[in-house]
Amino acid sequence: MVNSDVMAALASRWPENKINPSLDRIKLLLDYLGNPQEGLKVIHIAGTNGKTSTSRMVERLLRSLDLRTGLYTSPHLIHPRERICIDGESGSENSFEELYKHVEPFLHLVDEKTPESPITFFEALTAMAFVSFADTPVDAVSLEVGMGGRWDATNVLTPLVSVITPIDLDHQEFLGNTIEKIAFEKAGIIKSSVPVIVSQQVKDAAKVILATAIEHNAPIMREGIELDVLERSVGVGGQQLTIANPYGTHADLFLPLFGKHQASNAAVALTAVEAFVDRQLDNELVQEAFSEFSSPGRLQVLKRNPTIVIDAAHNPAGIRATKQGIEESFKFDNLILILAFMADKDIEEILKELTGFAQVVVLTQTKSARAMSTTALEKQVKNISGFAARIEVSDNSDEALTKSIQIANELGNSAGIIALGSVVLAGEIASILKVGKKK
Image 1 (cartoon, rainbow, N blue to C red):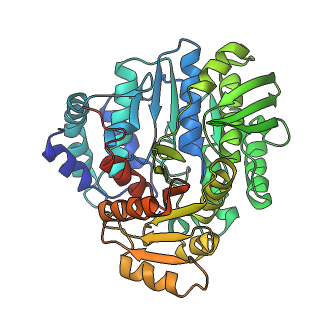
Image 2 (cartoon, rainbow, N blue to C red):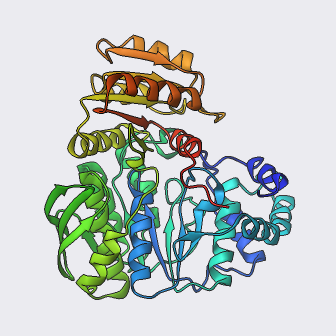
């Protein structure tokens, strides 16, 4: 296990779900570390939904070109070391501890310089990622923004390609309370003359992104205009795609992920990598990479008999995409939802999206300090007419899963379980079932 002192030291820092709008701390820290981010060849990925899946797809495509890759994503499902990967694999617990110990003295130096605003949890991990990528060294990096873009700790370099996945309302207390304001923050990763690949956006977000790209003379490729999923058919275990972009067309791509949103993520990821190398990739290489795409915690099947699926969707737009994926790819006669949320999310709108969706709902709460209590969640749910035929309450994820399995067994083989509403819930269920653990 990673030294508990290391985990406690990281956990004691300013949490990543809050923005302290300044790049001064991370720049000072990186300067002390010798600016490991300089020289990295990066695809930089921002957005509200889909950015982790897209980042993973980008990394796998880069690896198909025999490039040594770095991948930085957030948040993690089970352990922070999942966030920093080399060639698609996270490091050992010992290597994570050594990496932290290398960076730790410099964290304290910056803390001493800026006592009123010390290094945050996310800034510390971002610095660790840059050090790891520089020391390996890697040939290419798929770099996911933590929150926003303009003030994000990852926004301290000039990438070769920028990507913006779908934008919607989330983290409004930090990013703004309108789509336009949030899009402005996300578009803060667009750099002068650097190509930007953009997922399908709502109109208000699209306008802001296009204006920012024009301002920075950044070539833009947009889903639905310059790139698109031309064909999509749902099959066993995933979907078959044809994708076109300015570099050409790729057909017969099997994507072992569920939902129309994952097809869009794949089209954007492919275009980003082709922009990175400025050429069309060999179709056989793309087919092989697509067939190996994975996205832990995103409509991920953990178990069969009964089928247990986790999904990290935690805002109304994400919930809508997940619902579409479930309805399209899973044929349950009876659906059991395990629900848990962070208290700062738009619970009212999420619950509206889920009204009538499942026959049974099991309400619970995670171990997170930000978790909404089961008491508060139950109160909101009971105010909604027709939310579900049967509503149960469990004190924690373990009890909720046990109860859901019992109900599924009572209902028969056609019943399925979906744990939904929070990355933390997805991680806790995966951990209980011992999925994704690595020594």
